[in-house]
Image (cartoon, rainbow, N blue to C red; front, side):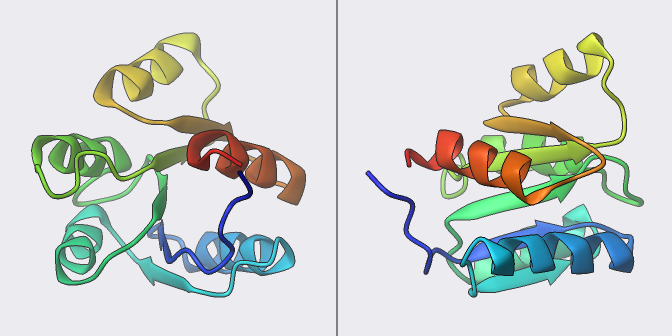
Amino acid sequence: MAVDKSTPILVVDDYKTMVRIVRNLLHQLGFENVDDASDGAGALAKLRAQRFGLVISDWAMEPMSGLELLQAMRADPALRTLPFIMITAENRRERVARAEQAGADGYIVKPLNAEALRERIARVMGG
């Protein structure tokens, strides 16, 4: 099954340049329905207000980190099954394990590129 390119995607990062990079990569991959939030709390508000098919979030954000966002989503029956890809600059095994234990569907280590993003999206969304 191919990934539906019209799937609404929420990009969450407190660093505007990173949001722009991820948006551009998604557009290169054919995804046009992309929204963003600058922290976990803002992301939760958007997730509760409209439907998304995927969340791509940075780990290191203030005041609510990507890990805290993921934990809040997995505790919310309406958001529990929403695919979630974590992006981080850290490649330590224990960090990957924490993300997986919290319920992340995928994990990408910066620097980000279109191929890594395409592969991870395909893996978590069944395409």
